[in-house]
Length: 73
Image 1 (cartoon, helix red, strand yellow):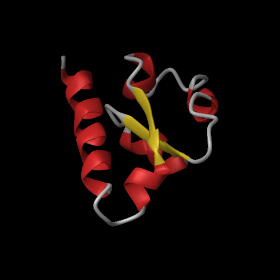
Image 2: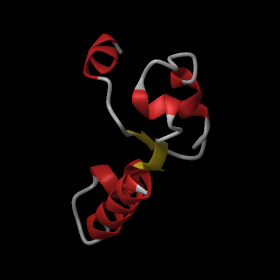
Image 3: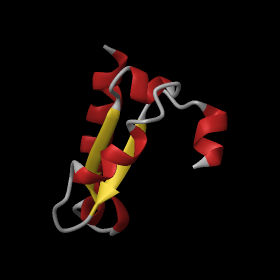
């Protein structure tokens, strides 16, 4: 957590497994000095798509890129 505070990311991507998508973003909400939190650029993506390398990894990468692109707008 300290390293995230120091780096002040513009986007935070949080992988989730078996539901609970929004629950993991709540941990960051008190840290309003982080640019990603301030701009509401906290994204949850399926950990199954991001962490298991196989044909579905392309779907995960598409969703990851889509999240990053939406933060740019």
